[in-house]
Amino acid sequence: MRQSYTLPEMFLLGTLGLALLLPLAAVLYIFIRAAAGISLEFIFAMPVQRGITGGILPAIVGTLWLLFGTTLVVLPVGVGAGIYLAEFAPRNRLTHLLEMALINLAGVPSVVFGLFGYAFFVLTLGFGSSLLSASLTLAIMTLPLVVTATREALHGVPVSFREASLALGATRWQAVSTVALPCARSGVLTGTLLALSRAAGDTACILITGAAFFLPRLPTSFMSRFMALPYHLYISATQLPGMPVERIWALPGYCCS
Amino acid sequence: MVENKHKVSLKDISIFYGKLHVVKHVSVELPENEITAIIGPSGSGKSTLLRSLNRMNDHINGMRITGEAMIDNQNIYADGVDVVMLRRKVGMVFQRPNPFPKSIYENVAYGPKLQGLRSKAELDIIVENSLRQAALWDEVKDRLHVSGFDLSGGQQQRLCIARSLAVGPEVLLMDEPASALDPAATAKIEELMLLLKRTLTVVVVTHNMQQAARVSDHTAFLLGGELVEYDVTRKIFTTPQDKRTDDYISGKMG
Ligand SMILES: Nc1ncnc2c1ncn2[C@@H]1O[C@H](COP(=O)(O)OP(=O)(O)O)[C@@H](O)[C@H]1O
Ligand SMILES: [Mg+2]
Image (cartoon, rainbow over all chains, first blue to last red; front, side):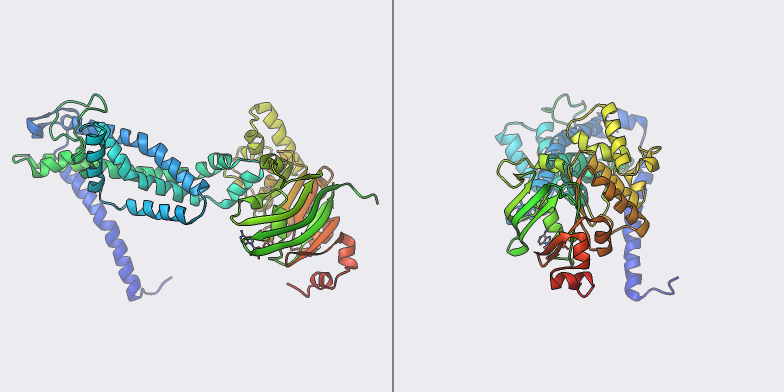
């Protein structure tokens, strides 16, 4: 079909190759290195000796709690705000400004949100170092992502569906809830999952709002301190002399699976 | 011929988008149980005028309308008019078939369900009747639960008509309902319109003059937002009173 690529086309093809190969290689490499350190005990046992032996159960459970808490806040608030912006906000400069602000907030480094969470939730509101403080902080960090994803997903729904619905006597809310939202569902979910995976991998936010470095028991409530995978990895890899190296490799194996 | 009573009557309607004056001082009365065609070159305000009859223009930022639009002697722009009730009475079919990404059944049941109808038995009856009225029942009765998207373009448009009929409208607005269809599908839609006018008042926008001549009883010619001429269709196409109408129908214009 095509005889030959021009130089710019070859360059672009090359970048595509790199863009695919490098991340794939990273994930594969981690999985292979992780295989040596992974065992049932590693997943389901309590850590012993500051995590040098034993398992990582509390870190897994802690991360799950965090994600649960974050979802509980970010899903209704983020999706609600996204729906408002896409469907009901007047089309004016203020709305436009707000949308720009949200897009930029999504790029703020997580440590900024972490510091805010510490000052506001841990100290001012007195939630202390806890799952609650950390979940709320992660929720704030991921809100702009979820709002923006929801908004874009709704913008992608053809106007003609909305018009058909309105012309049949739907109220604006009915047109949104019965047609626009169901059409946008997969976009909203993808955006939310991306935001949550960012929350799951974040260390800076939880570091100062509630994560413990060694706590060999499971959290009992949202007021508990907790262990979490990314923080555990960070400590294990950098702060603990004598940590068996295959245990370190095994950790990100979970973070990305 | 006895004149039917007037279902829709417009008095000095002007419509603006911001500063743009799109429909200019239109006054016209549309008889019940007839098909009225609105013809004119593109950009002449046909869709805008049509959409003012079920207040779909309300959703456009900066839209302003003056004058009186009466349906059954009630001004639909008066304070306190419930737009939702208005749209149940004045249905609309769009230029491109736009079924929802739902099953054929769910498409037709959508309107009644919005109104809170839940009874399966009643919905079944409404769906069947509406599909029959839209001359689609025989083609889809064995596959009511496949997606509306699986139908051909012409069938999709008839599905959209059935969906409108399910709400029980008295007026049906059609904005170039056949312009995206092939001649065979177009003929079916035209046949259907002739059936529908027994029970409904139909207003159809078309840029296809043969179509207007074939199906409509009255024709309104719009040019640059002005109603140049309105009369019995046969007169418009044989003995137009205005030179501009003559130019347009004989193809000397747009
Ligand atoms: N949403 C809108 N906002 C601003 N101007 C519009 C809008 N819709 C239509 N117009 C303008 O109004 C005029 C009439 O449009 P329309 O009613 O769609 O004409 P027709 O259906 O006869 O082609 C055109 O000049 C068009 O550009
Ligand atoms: Mg038009």
